[in-house]
Image (tube, rainbow, N blue to C red; front, side, top):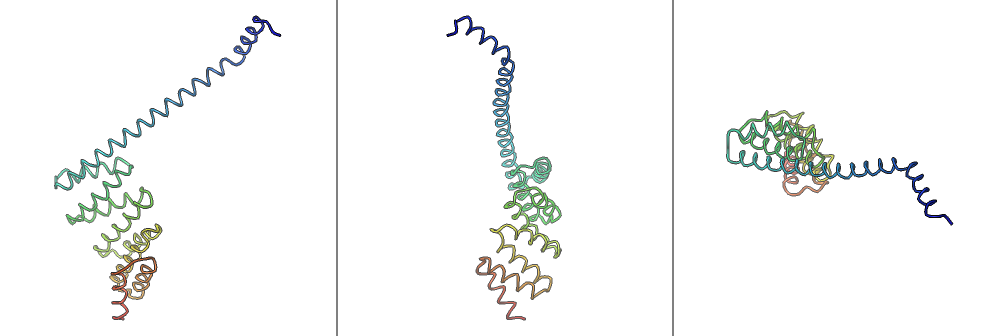
Length: 201
């Protein structure tokens, strides 16, 4: 059995061999822990700031303040957050209400290029409608087709494709699109549109 002195000596030897590694491991562990906490706090702070900025922009746009649109554009161009994408959708709506279709298309394109699928599909649909209003049928059709990749928007996108094709004078294509919308779960107006083409063909 080892004496106390031998045990102490073994501990010293172990520490001499492994002490630096243990200390380094502890330092790295603490650095990772506190670094992650700092990062997490920073992310939350950024999200809160983006939320506040978004709310401020909405108030400005809804109250018709002149600086609202420019503040929204600056926010959209300076951030890739979900709040910036939501602000872009609101900016597009504001622009359409003011017959500024170029700004609407640009704002919606930002969402289409950068947002997650569900929000991107919303922008696809809205941009397709703006382009349809401008009689830019091919671009409108491409935007509507992009929205079809998200299952929840398949029926809505197919019906919109029917509207675009009908405006182009492609009755057969419109009929097929309306039928696809019905097959995907669309109701009511899509069936009326389909039947009106059948009756008029």
